[in-house]
Length: 171
Image (tube, rainbow, N blue to C red; front, side, top):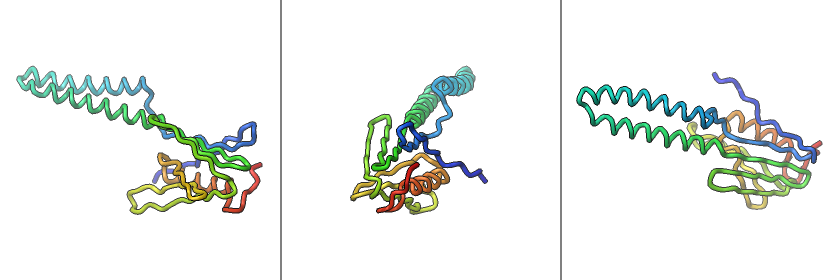
């Protein structure tokens, strides 16, 4: 059984704003990604070269395609690792700033009217969804978090935001 992970802790800014900085875990750096691909290419082309010398030369294009596909997959994974979400809670507002490789999005809600909802998954294989909503608008946060982290974040947000018409003190 995997140990329970602590939810992201809010950072208290000098201005009294509580911030949650969310980002996916990405263990590969650009340097280690290059080393990983190079080591996989070396192994693949060594085996392919051996068989090519035995007369099975058509294996070489397949080895090249394999490494090209691996490179594409690692780059896509590294791009996903650049996502960031910042949730800032002040006495008056809750703002969510989401940044992906393609775009940036900012949503601001009045804190007094925000509802924090953790929607259960439709099936066991799908993740839950953490939604902040107010006045008919909604924003999903923490898509890349684990289930335990998402539940912990929901609890912390409910403590800081409160229920509708209830805004607990932040200090």
